[in-house]
Length: 399
Image (cartoon, rainbow, N blue to C red; front, side, top):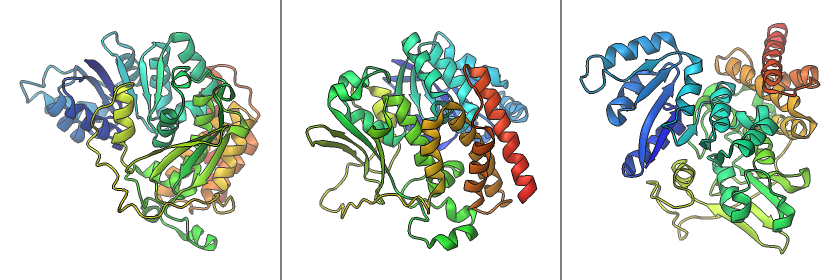
């Protein structure tokens, strides 16, 4: 029986995680659920899973949840905490075995890092933790003995296609020693893959969020449209699997059936295939090294159709080029890029800037801030805060 804390329980990854939990009550018990504002959804989850503790980081939402739970004899004794520091407390508690890290953005870094330092089994769906602090994050995992298991479909696919010794190395293996020549990340290309580049500027948030294959939150959907999401995954893969620049490649695969591949020196390529449903990688990480039912239907190869691949067009996806360059420029570059993107995407979703401005803002912020020295977590957070300030200033000057 694993006792699990779910960071970001009301988001799409959190909901999929709890769907898998509900299918296997003999294996998993919910210790803590966390969210920001959506207390109505949290009420439903509390009724279903009866967690030991809940965190709502918005104080008003926490108060509303307390009032609602107080009316139920079964739920009235569930503590509802409301401080950001409480996120760290509910993942480092001695009762917790496993942490699903599914808070989107930089807000998820502190509790995910705390779980790693506490030596927990961390199911990593928050890519920003590695984008912002990859070297420090993986070093902390190696020192504490935490097991970091990737939930992103692409990284989970790579993980499954790697030798067991590499899986167990926690980002500390020499891939060449195991015959690995290249890791190939696949991406759909998003909803604007075939759109004339000249039309990108006038695309709306609704259009950017209409992903052709995956059901995702707004922010990650926009990141898929710019392909910065793939760029962040590229950075994440570097740290998860200890890749060199020559060992990482990105290809566009519109069908999203092959989730990623590992190419070996003997010419073999191992790929993981599956439906575009996050419950597959979630179930894999939750049960690893065993396998459990995820609720996802198997592929029907007789009706699958053609699988196609192409190189990404970096003129169409300038954010992808920014991420690849930042990956090898240093930690401050990836931290700044991630921060700038969060600010830019938020303004785009509120229709304050055009779609193409996201790349312009990210490029400007990286150019102005990427040379900062970052040698500890405080310096990383300072770099993040400065990049956000610069991004805001650029937006106010231009738009």
